[in-house]
Image 1 (cartoon, rainbow, N blue to C red):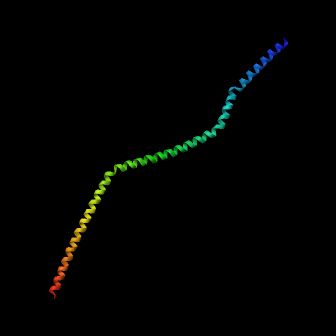
Image 2: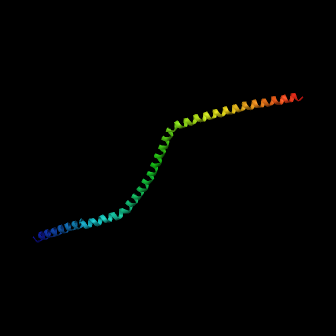
Image 3: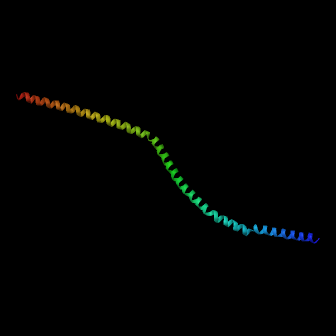
Length: 128
């Protein structure tokens, strides 16, 4: 009988000891310690990831601005085709006017040259 009583007492003591160990292992202060250790180990890596993400965001914002600016430039170029057509027309008119001026000056010069030749010829023939 003593053996059975002793076994029962030992079982109770071990059960209480196991329960106490379980409570101690899962006590809130231990959980907070474990949480603090986890944060201490993982926080520097998280901070590095955050700074990397902020840097990538800044680069992305810059690239987005550049693309939007390029798109607006292309759109404004499409809208400016009317102005280019107008410039082309004005240049053609200017070239045509310049040719007309050159032609009229050439005719005037030729008439003046031929008139001078006639005068020289008349002076030359009358003087002889």
